[in-house]
Image (cartoon, rainbow, N blue to C red):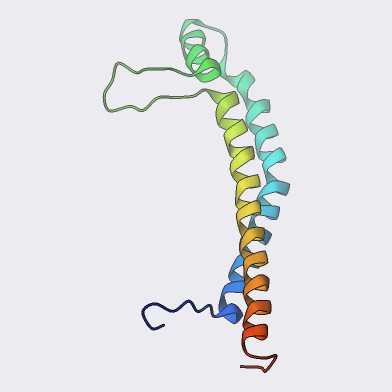
Length: 117
């Protein structure tokens, strides 16, 4: 592509965007079972003193850590909601890419007077 030009190889880009949509749909189908497995295994955390200390952080997360090597932990519910949103955002991004390819193809055809490449 020459500098100052906009060009899209839509024969390459469209399948990539469709692949992103397909991946997100597969993730969307798999996530409920994965989330269910995580939830089902939470009972294995236990209820002793160590488990209670872990549960506090696991359930509620931490705003600030005293260990500079560790990052803030948002907690299990926020993390699960974030994963759900990330999957939806990935699908929306892929679909926006598919839509953009189709808009570009239509504009390219108009600009070329309807002639093929």
